[in-house]
Image 1 (spheres, rainbow, N blue to C red):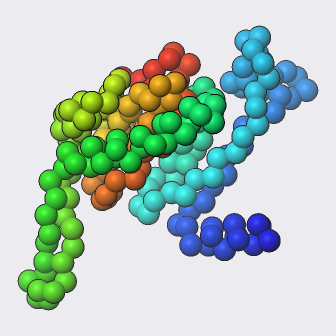
Image 2: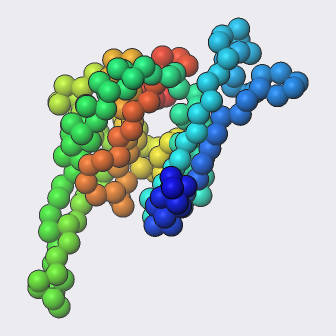
Image 3: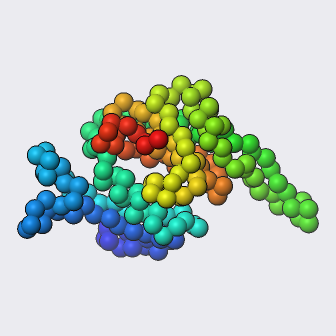
Length: 189
């Protein structure tokens, strides 16, 4: 029954990809496996990514790679950060100018027009909202966001909230909860 529901749900998603961590091979630990450094064996996990429309093909692979290299969170740490996500998204999205645009031919057909995101404006909005450890920059080709989008990260205790704004994204809702990077930061500058 679960398979059928997942299959039906996947049919409506433009692109669905699953990424699983690799277990240790007979030759030794898997690449990126903490056991290689003397730590506890890596836990197994899977990532299912529903890519937004008009996204590059490697987007989901970058999300999976980013998740795999981050520290794992306790349920309490994840829950605390998850409660902050809507406020972080709202502050980031609030940095953009919004207006309605109506078609001259059909005056009753309007759509929401949003200005392109700006790195400095997003940084200022997140800082003014009081979030700690704010890092905002243009996404690079290897980031867990579409290349060229404004990528942001905010510290939330042991967790990080990461999100992005692109010209195509409208409205809050892109922040995701993750652990820290191996160097203890939320996002490389």
